[in-house]
Length: 207
Image (cartoon, rainbow, N blue to C red; front, side):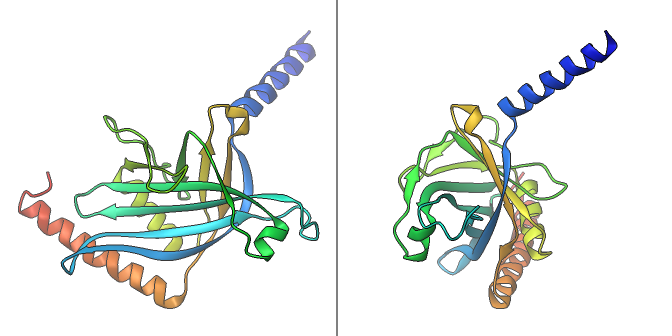
């Protein structure tokens, strides 16, 4: 009887996991600085990272692969902003630079190691971005700062994509590659931005 209960428990965990957990998929991410200024004054620092899942059979040009184009930014007002787009292509399409086809999804999250994933700030909403099928939302500053730290330390990050049908949910993981000059630019930007935020707090501009 005890053995049967254990089997039933394991089956239940398998069903629960397959229904609600995102499948973790290895990906290659290429990053670039995302910096916004207003009349020469720094407003936000971030990183855009574009990647695609590693092909199961890279010799099969017809194999479908998923691609993500996402970014995370820290704003001078003290909040974070994240954006993502999901696309589909084929191995052959990537090799020949064929334009990928964007795919609809419900929402997403981005996560650094040993930190909370980004999540929608209470009272806000997930918005449609300026490009087809893109999503964006305001999140907390700490999760975005953790992402900046992970990229600077060459640690892998994750981006999870969620659908109305949660059996389709999945997450990419991988390291974001920046050139030395890009990494230095992002680091310099963050140092300057944090200094501006601290000054704004002292002036009660940010409470």
